[in-house]
Image (tube, rainbow, N blue to C red; front, side, top):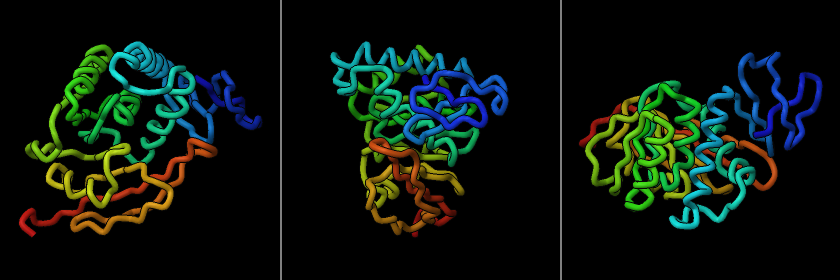
Length: 227
């Protein structure tokens, strides 16, 4: 994975050195405007995750991406970028988790989070259980529709390419603790959703170039479940 150049030098895509002056014991990943600080141990775990993706990709139709570096740039760095708005601990709900994006990179970087990965396609869910075992993650995988589950009591929710916030937020509302956040990558011109119980907190733009990511942030406020 690329890391940031020494202080005073402009970051270059593809650079591969470690800046320990500002991030002792950590690697600072930088590419296409995305940045994430992770330990060398987490970096190795992410490499292992990518290797498993590419190993099973063809058989399970996981992704059209064939190279580790391209997968990192397209999926891993945008996932890690979401950590900025997520809690350090608690339960992370990922709806339509698929091959584990964005939840798996986040759970690797934030080991005090526990994952609740919801993926109704059984083959994908089995792959996720494999990843959870291989990487020793604190996560449960549910192979059903989110609407079929009882309350999960999540502290944060993420979802990628599942539904727009207008449809997604009502589905996850029964599963959120008061004050929980939803951090949702969206299309460039997606309007903010006005959903009862959810407060829109902002639109973030992360990254540059082709992989630029637009992120809407919401917070679940305490409301009566009957209203």
